[in-house]
Length: 313
Image 1 (cartoon, helix red, strand yellow):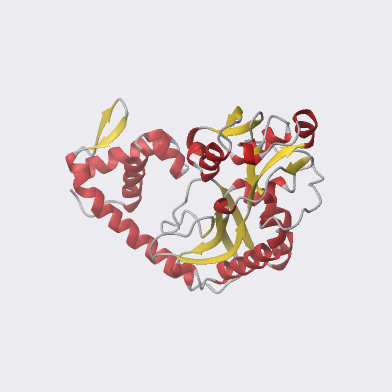
Image 2: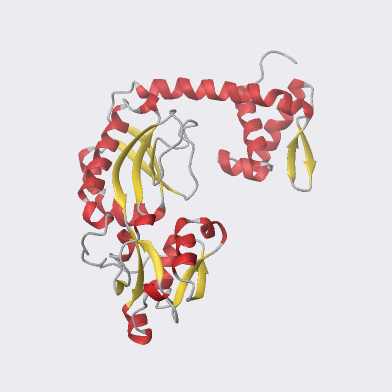
C-alpha cells in the first residue's frame, strides 16, 4: 500500500458494505454505478486486497473487508463530527436545512403553512425528506427530524411539541350505503381498510385486528395516504390521524378517538447542530407552527376541508 487511502474511496467502500450492491450504493451516493465500481477497484488495488465477494444475494465483505470496516466507520464518524461541529458554529441565516418527516405530516401540516418561513428567511433552503424510514441525524442524512416516537439514548436532543390523535373514519357515501358501524359489536357486518407489508406492524393494524373482529377487510394498504384514499372512496372504515381524516371532504368519524393510538410529536436534532443559526430558526418556526395547529392534531376541532384536488398516494 502506498500512503493513506483516499477518503472518498473509503466512503464508497462503506456505501457498498451497507447497501450490498453497486447499484444501491450508487443511488445512496447519487452517482453512477460505474463510478462506484471504479472507486472500489482503485481502493482494492491500493490496499492490495479483495474487499468484497460476489454472491447471488449481492456483495459481501471478505475477511480483509471486515478487517478494515470498523476502522473506516470510525473515520467516517470523526469526519461527520468535524462537519457537524463546524456547522454548529455557523451564525449565518443561510444555507440548507434538511427535515425528515412522514409524507402525511408534510402534506397536511407543514407545507401548507410554510410560506411565511420562506418570506422571513429567504436565504435558508429547506429540503423536506418524506420517508417512513428513520434517517440518521448523526450521519447528516438530515438536520432535523419530526418523529412520532422519542429517540432512544442520549445522543440526540428531542423536544415534545404536540400530540397526534387517531380515530376510525368512513365516507358519507359508505355510511349512507351501509349504515353506521357499532364499535361495541366489533364493527360486525362492515368493511375495513387493512394493512399490508411493513404497515401490518403499525399500532393501527394491531388495534384494528383487536377492535374489529367482526369486520371484513375490503382492501389492504401499505401507506397512510393509500388508507385515506381508500376510505374516502367508500371502500370501508379506515383508521387514521385526525389531521388526515378531519381535513378530507366527505369523511366522518365513526368512533371516539383511540387513546391507545395517540402519538407524541418530537422535534429531534443532533446536539452539535442545535446552536446553528439556520437550524435554530427552522426549529423555532416548526415549534410555533405545530403548537398553533394543536386543535387539528389532537382532534379537537374539524377544520374546513381541503379545497384542492385529491392527493396521489
